[in-house]
Image (cartoon, helix red, strand yellow):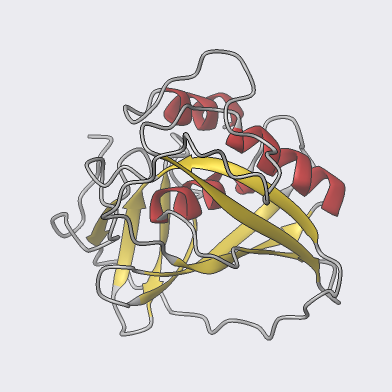
Length: 218
């Protein structure tokens, strides 16, 4: 699965991988005046729960994710890691996050190639387009590793195609699972990432935009 995960992220049209560190690990307070976020961009709200993996490995996996591509319309985003009492780690986005990256980071943290102990990632994502909230997780039955499945708070079962953030309803029933109560650390690990805000790519408002039971791999 690891090579498939890398392949879908490297091939996305919105940026290119050129072998350097991309937007990984920037200082959150050091905004570059040359950065030019898309004025039409609206961040998604939500967070990721990583059930397995040490906080150092999860931090390293997130930094690796930030280095995969270049952004056409870059913006700086803050990521916070909060250890939970059950051993999980909550990945929070205090200023919001691109819907594309919240979904794709969930897939990435389900099986990051350099951190094999990190897995069991799920997210809760609120659409910036219509405010619908989703609970999503990697679709383990998909050998390509490029989809999430889950349900919305209003009762729809969905599949998300990660390369384009396509969202489609599915006939297979999925239940929406309520979010656990968060335990916030007074001193979370904080990471800054430069990510793309280009609203001309994919499905930036995270709206249902695909037919019922769409299988993008067919």
